Length: 311
Image (cartoon, rainbow, N blue to C red; front, side, top):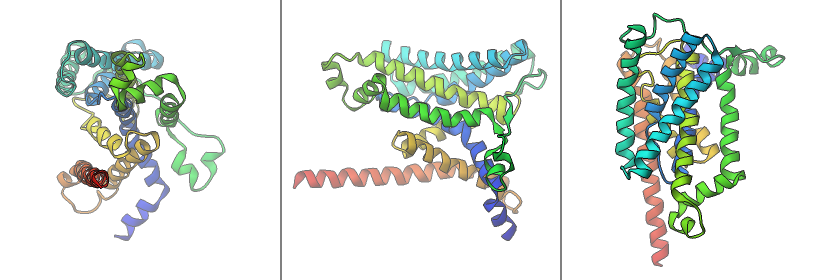
């Protein structure tokens, strides 16, 4: 066990944690924004898939990372708009509509992949671009911090900008105030002139915006191709991370960091003679356990509050 412990305590473990945390925190921010407005977006799995696919295809056909980035973000925002239209305009249940979008994304990406490239599982026949990694001057030469924090993909560094932007939007802008007001009491918000439907649509658009970066990172940073259902449940893990963090900026960051640590840990103990199926299930088992503990604690707090109110 000593080699495993040493490898986990090494700087490269933190590096790996940040790497695997990136495609979880982006959609977790998206979930948190929508949840604060009272419309929890569980379609992040589909949003990430569509953005990942769009980025790869556009980069392959145009040879431009900027076009790929813009197209991928627009695809994610578009998916958020579709969910908002079905939920807010057509009055569809948001959970059912989100599940339908996830299934649609899984099917349409493979269908279009075959139409455009004649590949059935991955985009291996086309040469797509990847977002660059960046060595931070001076920091890269520091013995411990350098291997931890330098050399990441540019989208990993933008992740910290995203969490700051999330905080700023929610707590420092009129839109953020309206989002929180609508989420806490939509009737009271409407009584003071806030358009509840419009604010919830904005929150879903923001959700798609943040989620799209997670998808783009998967296909153009984490790896350099698109493959069928490559999100592998990260959109649902993001829901757990956001819920665990109370849909707040710091809490969401810490929740995603927890799942990043678990994912990195499962990779680092791979040298042990443990069945690979069990190794792959560790992040999902952790998700179930964490959500169960979170639900029990929340239920106990609510019961305690009711008892205090009764007194």
